[in-house]
Image (cartoon, rainbow, N blue to C red; front, side, top):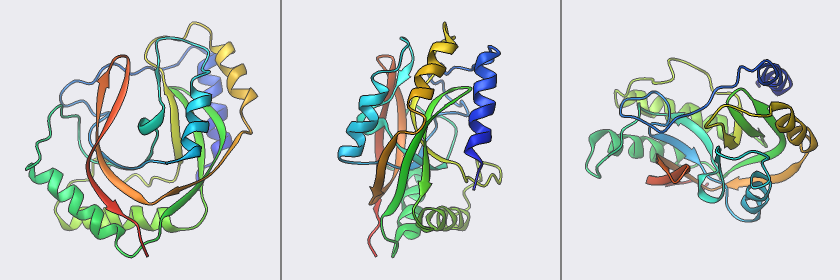
Length: 221
């Protein structure tokens, strides 16, 4: 399991040293914000996450709420603005996800603790059992079986989180941001039950991000 305390400390140091990074609207072929497999929380926990995100003390950043809130299972490809319904890769991503999810129960993740980092602010996710890790491993295996290359280059994704904010411009007052994050460092949003995994596409719109589903797989034992 990744050490979130160390991750938080590195993030704080980077922000105080003026080394924040920020996203820009996507362009074709960019390595970030391409299609991905994700799990999106539902219900009251979404309202709690979105309510806090709305209090973020700076303008001009990508503040996430509602259906944009997600846990990333796997990044799949560089950014493409248009992924048609009959695209072979899109079909393979979905088939592999269904294969991986079959027979698994819904994923359960406790979302607790607001963590600032070099590129934004997130909420720490701690799986309640091994279902999420099992799903990730099974999905990697199913993708490999379909000859799909590893965009993550062998990285073992062991840091689970939901992003509240991605910085989209230089920070004017990093100390104010850190005070806000510190005030919510121990906030417990509860356990998110995630019964659906999705292949999604991200789109920049009106100064934020829209998340569109390209396919779903249901987690039912």
